[in-house]
Image (cartoon, rainbow, N blue to C red; front, side, top):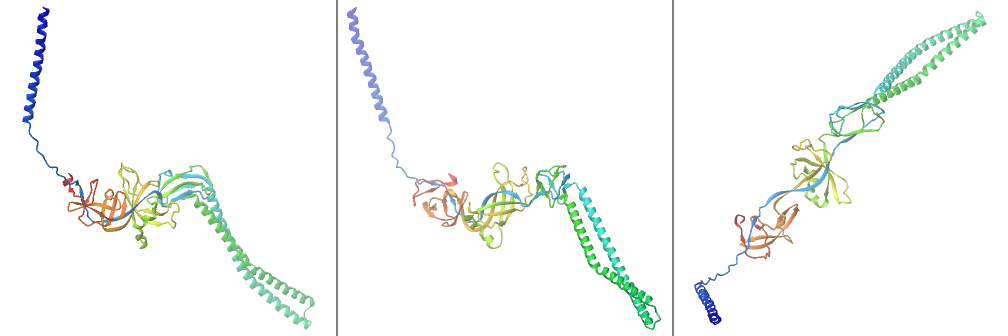
Length: 433
């Protein structure tokens, strides 16, 4: 048995070896068959394609130069409501509250008037008394003038009687006592005439004094009347209450602030313009005019913003030394126009202002990113890149204004072009593809 198994083992090994050789032969034959049946690839030449770019056509336009600035809305006319006379507040307008609208001529505050009315009535009485004294003095003057006439006539009669008795005394027909009594009567008549004349001469001074008293009485009455008038504080315009610091029943002193009111629909904006931007609006001021402007609420990115018309009302007389800017005031022309579903334009609103300046003709407005260093623009000329140097009039926000270096119809490359070389061949993308 051991010999039989020994004989079979070499035969088994030989069989396995033969099987491996057969498999390898078949694999080699299949490989040769595949290689022989493989097609030879065709050779193609590499064609260099020029880069494709997008272009935009240069078109000249007219452009208005604007100068933008930011500012805060403030009232053009703001009035502090203050007491001019002391007293207790007996009336306050129902709309004398922050934001309340009070019309022109309406009573805002009234102070207790009782003592002021008494002073005014006392002034009337003093005027009436002074006028009565003047009338009495005038009648006294008339009476004195009549008394002078009578006294002068009496003195003339006494003088004639004295002369008659003197003549009789020389003929010894009149006694010494009669002559003495006549002289005494004549002297008394002269004294009475002199007294009346002196009293009449003093009437001018008395009349001046009475007129002075009347004038002072009238002045006192005017003071009392003015004080009474000052107890009532009325609005001089249609206005909105900005602040309120007093209540009904409160005692106030002269000069005490009760609140403040600003004129409705009269609003301004103070802005500061850098000196280098003044060249865009400077010609308006040289011709004696002031440029128009537009005002809109700033920071309204997610809300509808309205634009209000405005104009430059005045330019301040001094340049700000710290910022080197020129302060000016814009007058809003239509502040009563409401922003839809938001609010009226009110003091304190932060706004963006655009001052409308000069108009420049035949300039090219392009996106700012198209301008390369050294004021170069990439253009296409006969399917080749041409680098054009241009003159930039102004860089404004995301745009550039070019006033020379371009011609109408020039094709400006608007897409990125890495590795750009002047004169390189290009192709234009059609329909943006």
